[in-house]
Amino acid sequence: MPMATKLKTYDFGPQSKLTTGKKADYPWEDWFDGDIWQITMGEDFEGNPLMMERIIRSRAVSRDAKVTLRHVGLTPESYGMGIIVLQRTDIEGPETRKRREANEKRASTRAANKRTAAVVEPVRKKTKAVTPETPVAKVNGTPTKRVARRLRAVS
Image 1: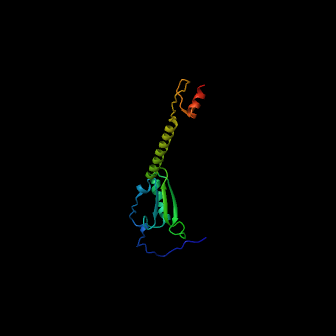
Image 2: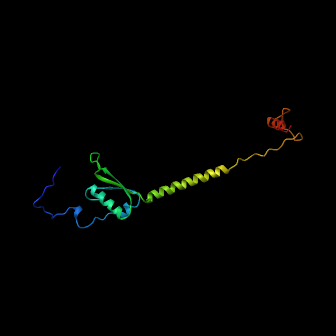
Image 3: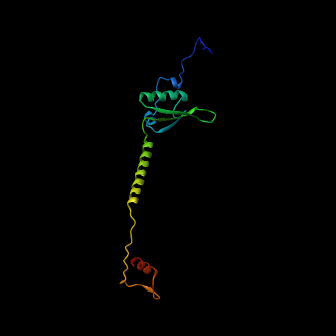
């Protein structure tokens, strides 16, 4: 088991960005709105992504929020270092809400169209009843096919 090294002295003067007295100002309200966010080391946050994960989780706990996080590498070789993808999962985000509402609207429109299509009845043609007294159209002395069918139906 490795042992810790005891130092005689160390210069604690210059501070790193992670240990400075002022807190970094991150857009927590945006990041915890329920949508999926990708934040990049050096652009959106300073320091190690694992440290940023701890900060994100601490802020989420202080807001009674549940978050899901994944680390993504900037390059295939840098496994899990550089990019954090996060989403607050206990609320619905604005983009998700828009998508759900659009899908519900489309579904209700489809259902209304189906109900309308189901109610439409085919239009029936009214045919005149042919009786033996009805004048018959004849071609070359014989009744036409249509008139002959009507006459058969009546008799």
